[in-house]
Every structure is written in structure tokens, then in C-alpha cells.
Amino acid sequence: MDFKFTRQNLKGREAFLERLFEILPGFASWTILLGMSFISFWQPLLAAILIIAFDFYWLLRLFYMTLFLILAYFRLSVERKTDWMARVHELDRLRDLIDQVPFPKVPGSKDQNMAKEPGTFGNGTSVGTKRKKVSLWFHRRKLEVLKRSRSLPPPSNDIYQLVIFSVAKETQEIIEPGIRSLTQQKFPPKQILVVIALEERSKDPVKEGAYQIQTKYRSSFLDFLVVLHPDGLPGEARVKGANVTYAAKEAARYLEVKQIPFEQVIVSCFDADTVVSHDYFGCLTYHFMTYPKRTRASFQPIPVYHNNVWEAPAFGRVLDVGASFFQLIEATDSDKLVTFSSHSMSFKALVEVGYWPVDIISDDSAIFWRALIHFDGNYRVIPMYTTLSMDVVSGANWWETVRNVYQQKRRWAWGVENFPIVMRAFFKAGKISFYAKIKYAFKLFEDNVAWATWAFLLAFIGWLPVLFAGREFSDSVLYYSAPRITRIIFNLASLSLIATIVLSLLLLPRQKAKGSFWKRILFALEWLFVPVIVVFFSALPALDAQTRLMFGKYMEFWVTEKKRK
Image (tube, rainbow, N blue to C red; front, top):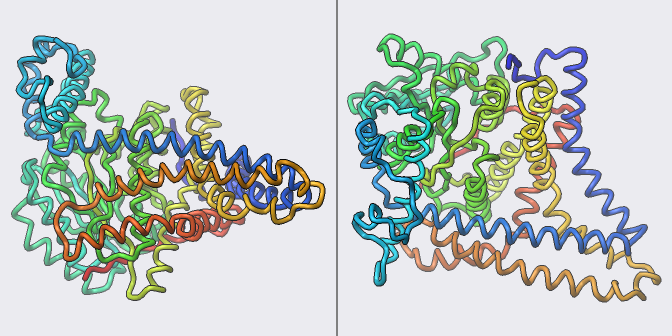
């Protein structure tokens, strides 16, 4: 569908719809918060009933999310030791094997083909062996889908990786670990084109660091480009999307000269501090090859924030681990998954949709919505059960860290700017099914409103009915029952908190750090402050972002400050 993914230069009905849907999320959030506060004052009995109903709903949602968090973590642990490049080489032989791939059986079945595999299930098998068998089962399912589709992938030696690092004020010590991790890939580095997308307005030490890295590592890759993005180009805002789009267009010209087809290129858009494991691009190549509609998909890893996890402040760690958990939960429902932070996609698809938006802050999620609309709903995000690591936000001192964390979360919450644009597009998209429109619209709206309201309802507003109780309410059974019911609900919720603490410890880097035992204990105890942290560093920034959008006070892109000790 031909649709301009922007809020700029709108007229008539388009401008009216844009402002209407800009107002809606913030208006809904404030209506819920203020409405419940007023009801607690005027009708505490009714408010108590509503709060108990909400607490019960929240508990069910919490159990639901915890269940899928555990399942997602299990899948992540299953794939942790998978040799992705071995599977990629197996796919290279797919043309010979296409008629021999058996329909996948559940691990532990008596299928003879499965029994011939090394490490078959049976009495006395190790946990590691069972995990390998589960991983093999998922692999065979993908092969069967690929077999039925007859959409054979290109050979792996014809697939190239384009990796774009967006740099504005990050210095060499921030960027270099990520570049170094690319040289250690099992995927051939000579099939990787590295691009540093550098802002022209960056300070001289930042530019010098980028060129020094280029000189040091250029021979390790297919090539290494440093693309300087001019400041103030027409139609652009000072956003990351404008920077990486300019770099991607330069990369497109390079690929054309080298006669490398765009459909054989996977582009990854990374933050400057992104570090990947040695098997990351093998995993990405595998998922690209096994998905039949590979040029109509993005590929989303699980972001973790381990680069400076032992140095970062407690509230920053908890929030970023929470973001990782959210992505794990989202990965279990690929039909609703949206790209977040560092992600990958077919370069052919990126070019066809017109690259990342150049006037929108939330480019990482906006590119999914742009592609979904452009391809008439025929686009999806494929979850990858592998991680990449970035930095927890920090600052020169505690107060600066507080400010930086708040601003980063507000920038993330500014993804609400996608809602009005997507809704306008849905009004015009005749080829996208009504069900898909409702599904995506509800997800966008509900996620943002829940983000801005739930923590306030649980931490503060939920206790107002008791505080404002009049004689009539204070003499009722509900007055005495409500605190007990709420206490039971929160006690049950503590089971999810325990599961979260355990998983957060399991997700931490395995390498030893100085005093790591006591640091892990401290890390576990930090989760006890989640109610306060979530209110002031998650819900409040989200409400701030929605309020700004509601009043047309559009934000500018703020570059997260990154420091290393």
C-alpha cells in the first residue's frame, strides 16, 4: 500500500485523524488514573470493587506472563549450545535432502529415524542431551515447513550480512567491542559488510575513533565503511532513523557496484554498544534460510544488558532485565511480535519500504509497522532464541544516572507515536484483514495504556478507597475484606516475583566477576524494590511521553549516554 509513514505535512482528514489518535492514548491513561481517584473519593465502595477486579485480572495476567517467560527461557537455554553454522551447512545440502526430510516427531517417540540420531531420549539421558533433542525437534519442524513451501534458500556462501552501527557521541571504547565480536563469528567475516553510520555533528574524538576502528578492522571483513551523515537534510529530524537510512543508501550503492543481489543480504541495525556472541550471525542466517517468506520478515533476538551489568546502578539493572523479560515473553507469540532495539531484516524488504523513517524517534518499531503496511499485512517478525548484549544506562554520578535512565525509558515509551500513524494507515488499507487491524490496533493501544497506568493503580490508587472510606463503607463487610483480598493477591503475585528473580540470576553472564557471588545476592535483593522502580522509571516516563504527544509537544531524539569503567 502506498502510504507515507510520517505525521509531517498532513492536511484535511489525515491531519484530523492524526491528532485524534495522538490524543487517545494519553487521554485514556489520564481518564483511568483520575477517574479511579475520583471514584475512590466519591464512591469508595464501587472503587474497591473495581480495584479488586483489576487486581485479580492483573494476577491472572502476571501468572500468564510468568508461564510464558519460563517457557521462553527454557527455549533460550535449549538453543544456547546449538551449532547454528552446522545447521546452515545442512541447509546448503537441502536440495539433495528435500525428499528425505521426515515429518517431525515429538522427542521421545519411537520413530526409527529419530532413534538413529546421537543422544536419543531414553532412561538415564542427561538434561543436556534432552535439550539437544528438543532443539532438533524444532529444527525438523522448520525443515518440514521449508520442504512444503518449496522456497529453497540461497546457498549460505551467497548470503551477506550488512551490519550498521549508529554512532552519534559514542567513543571508541564503546564501539570497538561490538566490532571485535564480528571478527570472531563462525559465520565467515568476509561475507560481512560493516558500516558505521556517523553523524556529521559528532565531536572530533568520536569521528577519529570511528576511523581508527575502520583502519584496524577493515581487512577482516568484506569491507568496512564509515558513512558521514550530513546534518539538517530536508525532511529529516535529528533521529537515529535518518542516520542509519543515509548509511543504508550508501551501502545499497556499494552492493550494486559489487553486483550483490539485495535479496541475498540481511541487514542488522545495531546500537553502538551492541556486542554479539560468536554464533550470532550463524543463528541469524539459519532463521533467514528456514523461513520461506524470508524477504517479508524481520528477525528479532533477545536483547540483554550485560556489557556493564556489574557496574550499573540497581534500578537501571532491574529495568533493563525487565525489558529482556518482556522480549522473551513477546517471542512466544510471533504473530504479535514487533521489532525492538537491535534487529535484522531482508535488505530487499528494507529498500522496498523506503528504509527507516527519517523523522520518527522510535525507528526500531516503526520499521515493522512501515513494512506491515507496505506489504498489506504480509509481514511478520521471527523470534530468534539467541541474545545480543548492550549497556545498562549510566552516568557520571547517581543523579545523572537517574536522569539518563528516566530519559531513556521516556524515549522507549515515545513509541506511542506509532499508534496514530498506524491507525491512519489502517483506515486506508483495504487489503489488510479486519481481524489483523483489530489485533494490532488493540495491542498498540493496550500495551501503551497499561504501561502508563498499571503501576500507579497497584502502588497508589488501589489503596485510596480505604483511605477515603466513609461511615457507610467502613461499616460494610467489603471494607474489612478488601485489604485481605488484596493481600492474598499480592502474596500470590510474590510467586511470580520469585520466579523472576531466579530467571534474572540465570540470565546473568556466566563469566566470573570480582565478588560475583555477593553481587548476585545483591542483584536478587534489588528486585524487592520493583514497585518503586517501576512507578518512577517506567510508568511515569510512559505517562510523560503520552501526555507530551497528547498536547503536541513532540520529543527530539535523545542519545543514551554510555560509559565504561
